Image 1: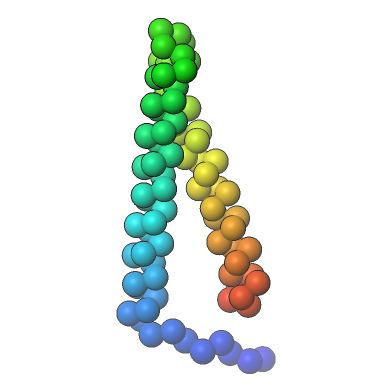
Image 2: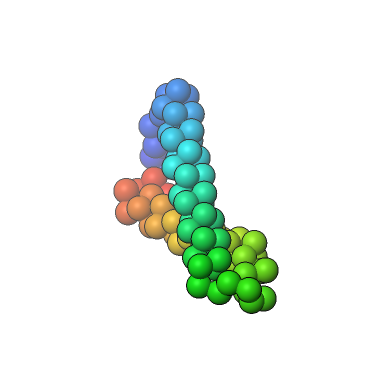
Length: 81
């Protein structure tokens, strides 16, 4: 069996920090957009009262999709199993 070369620790930590910041920024943007959209499109309805859950669902869906994309790219690059 051939072993993959190990990355330096600093490179792994830096990549983790950058990806965490990127995904947190995307989650915040989706949360803000979903809540603002519900407030504008459905004022005075039950949907507006449920905007927390709509924002939560939107963030979950976007992060799930991004996870699938990241795993696909890792598999194509040969770093994933």
